[in-house]
Picture 1 (cartoon, one colour):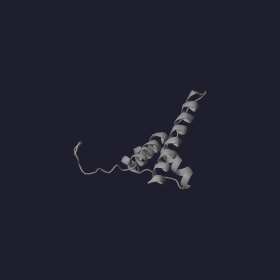
Picture 2: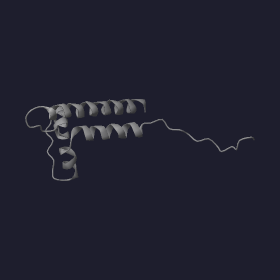
Picture 3: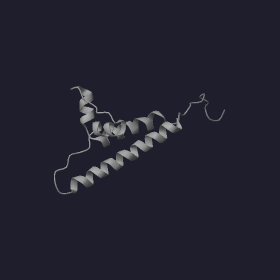
Picture 4: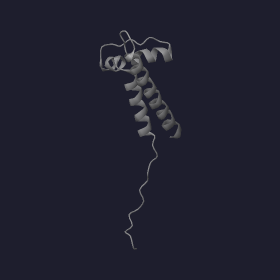
Length: 93
């Protein structure tokens, strides 16, 4: 669980860096095209991802910071420490 949370925080940090880099690039001169999720997958895996016209295509063509941040938040949430409930005992007894 610790490594899942750690990986989630690292992905969230990567999403913040990606979003800030896109903001800086958008302020520069010229036309800016955002970094798509399919581009990030191509950089990481070395394989070209071919979207097929479904919901997955919309996710792959979306901004990379959004999908990376969503995965990071999901990992942080799913790998959090569980709080176990104890038996109910009224105060004073």
